Amino acid sequence: GESVGLHLPTLSVQEGDNSIINCAYSNSASDYFIWYKQESGKGPQFIIDIRSNMDKRQGQRVTVLLNKTVKHLSLQIAATQPGDSAVYFCPYTSGTYKYIFGTGTRLKVLA
Amino acid sequence: EPEVTQTPSHQVTQMGQEVILRCVPISNHLYFYWYRQILGQKVEFLVSFYNNEISEKSEIFDDQFSVERPDGSNFTLKIRSTKLEDSAMYFCASSEDLQKFFGPGTRLTVL
Image (tube, rainbow over all chains, first blue to last red; front, side, top):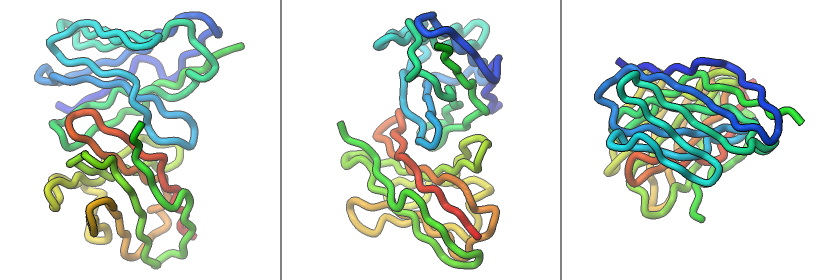
């Protein structure tokens, strides 16, 4: 079914540390996964995506890991910066037509 | 880098009035969407639009809502008779495939 879940509502990390934000999904047929961040008062901003035929994809300071065995998705942010403070989402992708957003994980970067 | 734009950034209206929220999707995209986010809540799917017709709509998108692509560049959301509970951020998004690009949003305040 359609389910997006995040393990923690809030994650606090020290500036410069690495952050790991987790997401679980329930639909084994999902073949596309995506991460967005949303800063206060702004629209969701694309971070990185991955298809189910991959288990890892890297971007600039970010890495997405996909574990299809346990239906788990994670976003790793290296050397977390104050500008990374935001709410992070891994919406369920239903075909091309819609995303189902969960409540997200709020990342707080501590100075 | 191309981006989705939305106008106005903030719209204040009286209950019962009609409002039109405007969006300019990315020019080569074929799929268009509206989402909304009530303050402090999840981003919710409203409607998707492709090939000049609605592809899918949520339960929120009732008869008070309509969408239109009046020309080759604009995509609009009309709320015929606004209610207090329509107060929210409304995000337009567009895509050419699974990755959706979101606009900055229009904050609608219904008094």
